[in-house]
Image 1 (cartoon, rainbow, N blue to C red):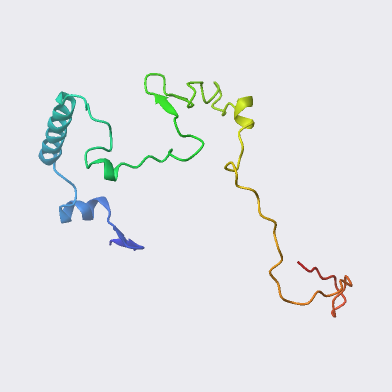
Image 2 (image 1 turned 180 degrees about the horizontal axis):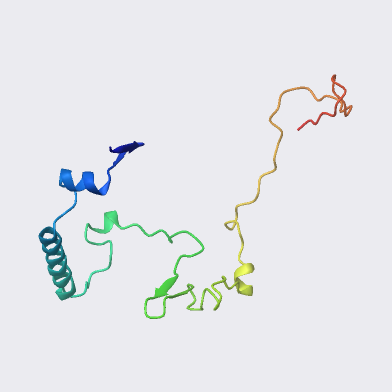
Amino acid sequence: MPKRIGRFTFHSREESEKLGLIPSDAELEAARAEMAEFMARGEAMPPRTDPPGMGWGQKYYIDDLTGTEFEGWTRDPATDTWRDAHGRPAHDENGQRIRYPEDAARPVQAPGDEPRPVTPTSSAPEQPDTGKDDSGGMSFRI
């Protein structure tokens, strides 16, 4: 008897064989041969010369690093290591990010962008803080 769990139906081995859900040895061998042919065609193709993402044109190329602190980083595929925009290693042998002293000196905000003072936006009148509410417990005003 098939068992239905969620949107999936599970059959026993015998039920699957009766329904023809298990492929025969000939079908499995044909699928393996087809996969081997597909892999051989892929390995015979020449390597790509155009940069990835440019197949649809410049319009569809998305660079997730642009405008972030990682802009200019590159990955060396031979050693699988990342280098920062100055060509320095980005991670140590334990995989931890290397923080260089000159990177800490960089301003967080854009030049000329001064922080604005925070002004209260509440129009409710200021209430004296008694530290207690009507229930006898403590109240906190934010």
